[in-house]
Length: 487
Image (cartoon, rainbow, N blue to C red; front, side):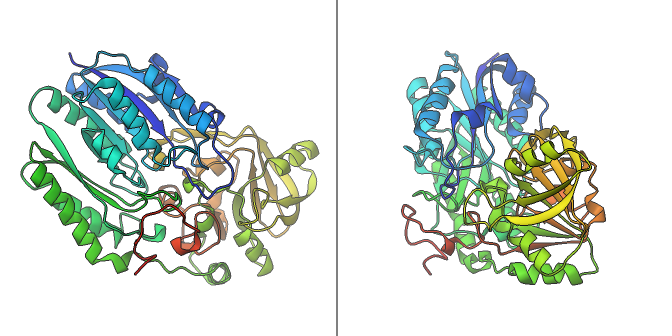
């Protein structure tokens, strides 16, 4: 049976976040090698789980290397990147017949803005030019020429929220199986038109994003096409390859692959004006939520999107809700300092806190609240449903729930956690469906969790390191021109 290595190095790096990402951020989240990798990822709703399942289905012998990921955050330090890259390469057990690598595609380190392309370059240098290397990428990848050059084929997610990660991993492994059996010879083409799509327009179940994937599905029907991908890019990373990308993998026909990638890119370019967002202000959103009969109203705090690297402690919407006299609001804030105060006070005790707004000055000031400590928890929860990110659970650290006299529920965590699961609050005894307003630190990704309880969902144009409008960011390294930054 062919021997196929499996590796993973996934991080979405927001270069505008002032807090750097260290090795400990990876080690404390998920870092496994060898048999531990198999135990961690076998059966998971994640591309690594799909890679393992696909290898078994294709009759390939898995040779596990190392896999690690960290919660989206700032640029990876040079020291952390070098250590992870060295450990990743050291875990490759040559000789191999093929290599499957799960990357994010929007990873940036202090020394290497194109961290994904650089790690693939090192892997290729180690393995030689002929070993098939098939890579999975996140839908939000900024795909560089180096990433395409040093891989045999790339397979990216096709759904946002990311619910198809397992399927894409399986697809990559089955393509590897066909390649090693001599049935196909993958060749790929990359097209990167000079355009961005606002994060508020990236819900793949709705237009205009749906049209991008309808085009992809059309390309998959073309004879000779083995796979196709659209990545929407990650404009919170100030790197030269920032922006959308279109990939096609053909069976031995480079001209066909190029034609397919160019066709998808041209179709998107013709509709480029459709991908520019326009959202309500915080004041408009809170006013609407108070008056809406469709409760609870989920307000997506776009500027504090933890899944894109934000700090998770923005108080902009909470402060506006208090200012307008709203009641029955729930918000989750990353605030270790306030958690410590709640632990010191104890359950059922009254506390006076200044919550949130502590990471920087971009996401609002701390908000003064009075309330009662309802719950103290270890912050660990389990999610059994398929959710964005393929998580089976989470650890938000020691967590406190504070209830205010106005009926506001303030969930305070000591670890940053993207809101991908309702179990994050249900495990604390909080019933989100009973609230009037739910402030959620995300854009599209939390929909899978919150749609079942939402009366309606409204995206809000809040300030922060994940603002919807790319014109809000002081880019220095991106390519130019780039629509809509330049018309």
